[in-house]
Image 1 (spheres, rainbow, N blue to C red):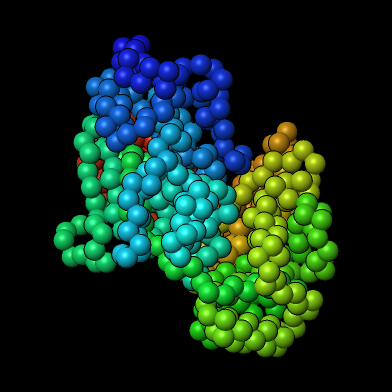
Image 2 (cartoon, rainbow, N blue to C red):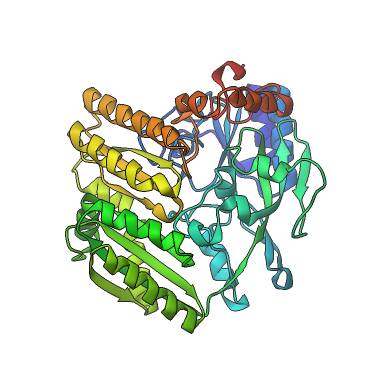
Length: 458
């Protein structure tokens, strides 16, 4: 291994570090999932450098883990089996902007917020919004989605093509700038969501959208969760083109009130947003208001000014730290599931009852417009009993989602945190994923210990 580290130092100079401080900085997760630090951290600036790094690591059988902003929730970017961390925060260029085709080519280290700042003058924007200011490479690797997925889709729909480097240093391109293709296997779709287990993404071709002429947002309360969830279901089934439709239960509302100094009533709430023409937005808002009223909504508040909308969504995006602050000294086991819209009310109600019976604080919130919701299970980090209780709750959420025809995760991904749930969802198909992994990474160097069956981890 010393030869490998010497070669990496010769290649990158000061952009390769083995200092304890740098390695420790790349050893932390946003949640309870943890692992040891990597043996070194590399900061490439070009695809050529990434390819050279992987050739060195392949020759010396040194594991490689990619790193974006470090905001993933299931330990995706942790060096579970040692090796090096490839940090993409120096690869932040916009390679090509093609407004006439409504697409952009970017390096993986640019964040979604930075990209949208660069796009402001073009009349276009990139809509996928997972809440955190994640890097676009990391968002593609985890097939991220978020608050706007109900209208604009996830990274699966947003990524038209990729440049990526395989385990042996081979550089490949997938997809194209064309709107569609029938030319062979869809390798773009394979790499989007592969969590760095097959390749490192070094460039993305992304689909853009026109900035809406008008935007309006609102927040409203409901007497109980079933009223709020039923409102969501009827809104979606009515064909109202919501840009966002988010849910917070009473516990999440209380946490957000305290954290953001808001005064929302202590009841479940929906937060919604409409995009379109001025007339279209007004009509959509009116129709939604009527549906919400029929389900007992209360305390309707509109936010049409930009600063008011920003404050509303800042509160939602900060819901995780707000919930953490609701229990002093707590850590969180955060989990998500996604179910068909028709089973959403059942899933949320059963989950709420299960959390209540456990005795743990567990606010529920999520992107319920596409059937995806989260539970933030707050535990004392020193309590093995509370940790076990929370993990059992998360396992039952996964089982419940599968029973209702859904999935164990709508956007968090698998990483190492949800590995144990994969056989129940995929059956023999999970072994097929392992076969793909072995074909592209026979030495098991790319983010080992994640996503695919452990017996394929070598």
